[in-house]
Length: 84
Image (cartoon, rainbow, N blue to C red; front, side, top):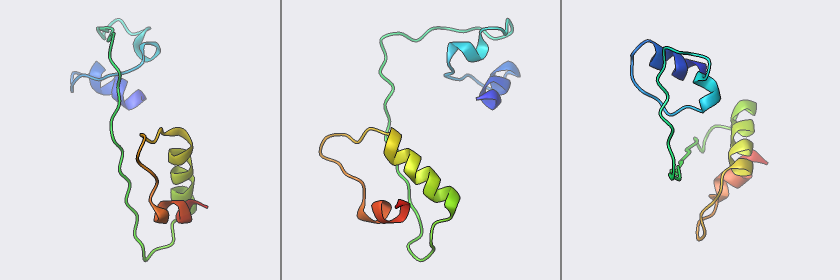
């Protein structure tokens, strides 16, 4: 998140950041976003021939624990096998 704040601070672009990340910085103009529901799809791919590292297994575990799966979708069988 700090990198996002630094990019905005240095004029590299704009960002969607939580208010607390920029509240104390008077060089950044914060514009509240209201009445929006931020949702997007996340796709992950792994190599079948390579056993996932501990870091990848941890990431897959976090993704499966914290992301909502839309009705009618499910985790791929390979993903379930790899993070267990």
